[in-house]
Amino acid sequence: MHPRDQTIFALSSGRLPSAIAIVRLSGPHAGAALQTLAGKIPPARMATRVMLREHQGEPIDDAVVLWFPGPASATGEDVVELHVHGSRAVIATLFSVLAVTPQLRPAEPGEFTRRAFENGKIDLTEAEGLDDLIHADTDRQRRQALRQLTGLLGDRARSWREQIIQAAALIEAGIDFADEGDVPAELIAPALSRIERLLTDIQSVLSAQGRAERLRDGLTVVIAGPPNAGKSTLMNQLAQREVAIVSPHAGTTRDLIEVQLDLEGYPVTVIDTAGIRETNDPVEQEGVRRARDRAAQADLVLWLAEDDQVAEPQEDVPVWLVRNKIDLPTFEGVGTGLAPSESPLFEISARSGEGLPALLKALVGFARDYFGSTESGLITRERQRTLLSETAAALRRSIAAVNLGEELAAEELRIAGLALGRLLGRVDVEDVLDVIFREFCVGK
Ligand SMILES: Nc1nc2c(ncn2[C@@H]2O[C@H](COP(=O)(O)OP(=O)(O)OP(=O)(O)O)[C@@H](O)[C@H]2O)c(=O)[nH]1
Ligand SMILES: [K+]
Ligand SMILES: [Mg+2]
Image 1 (cartoon, rainbow, N blue to C red):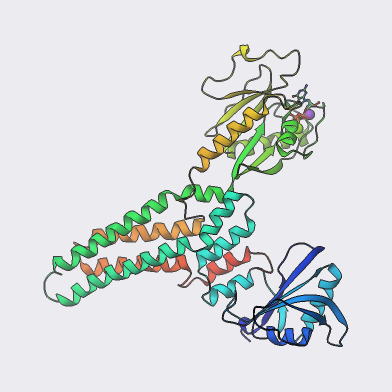
Image 2: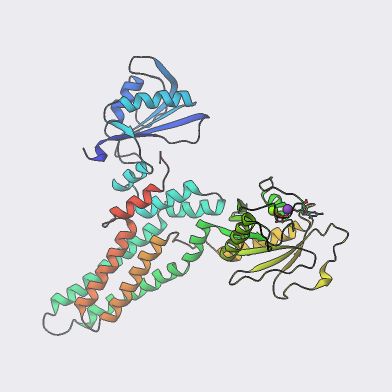
């Protein structure tokens, strides 16, 4: 039996227990399963209250159910939604009944979305947008994912593909037309200008892409510095909870500790590290190694120091010197002048919070520069970027080939069209599909 002939079910809402849980079914036997559970098929797309029952008639739960006959459903198949009380016992009973219902089986991760894609309900860029939307932590990420989900990239790619086909048609018409001698310039010129316009368009989308991809992945800020500088104290302040152990004992933090922050909509990962110093303790040595390693990969290092300590320079990573413990009477202050003149300098008390607003404001500014204006960013994934780059390269080759031979130019256009087809998931992408849909959660 083809996997699509099976009817799948999964919990599509969040962690139990919860007030309400939604179990979704999709496939040719969804209706029969609903009939068995509810004793009837309610009117399509109308929330209907029913008592769900086991096969022997024992009640399972007082539920609200929805019946979406295909193809006008999210997956394009017959879909049932069961809104039940979100207790583990209700779900366990319901699942045990569904599991023994013929032709039904639990869904694989992403299988609902995969079916929607395979039934032509969404293209691949929209599926990726859906995945991003589910995993969006901040408002900006949500807006970006939504743009992708509503098919902005897909729409552009479809229109590019049409223009490529038109240009190819012009060139091919020329080839047929002029079987002896050259293709008339009247046919080549409009095709060429079409391709050039297209290339400019794709290149501008490509150059705006880095930012959108970054927004998806977030910005990494590493707090580093000597032991006892107050790194973990600052970490807890930024996280606004006690994520890291603070103690007067130098060498407290050994592992990397991460928190995700939403800085005015920008996703920022802050990482607390072990204090950097020479030590004979092998565990602490490993901590110091990890700290240095992580700092080298960061987008920004906050070098926390006491008083006149200087920052360890980083290759390719900006470092801000942050002098902590300004509340101590022994604090000397700015006068020591040991910060490298070009790098920003902050003075804070991680304990009292003094100076933190200025540091936070600077971090938001850094994030804003880093992410840039992402409103124009259409590309959010490596896969999309690679395929668009391939399209652009083929277009460039086809422009270059026009004078060498029209067949060559037409062949390059075909390659460009194929790359766009892959972007939309309409061409030989089985292997890609497995990778993409595996990342989804069960029930999606
Ligand atoms: N007075 C004062 N004490 C602070 C401040 N920040 C941290 N401390 C104290 O300094 C000590 C070390 O703080 P931690 O946050 O553990 O320092 P750390 O840099 O994480 O230390 P390691 O993990 O051991 O490298 C603790 O006793 C803190 O209470 C501050 O702004 N003012
Ligand atoms: K400490
Ligand atoms: Mg610490």
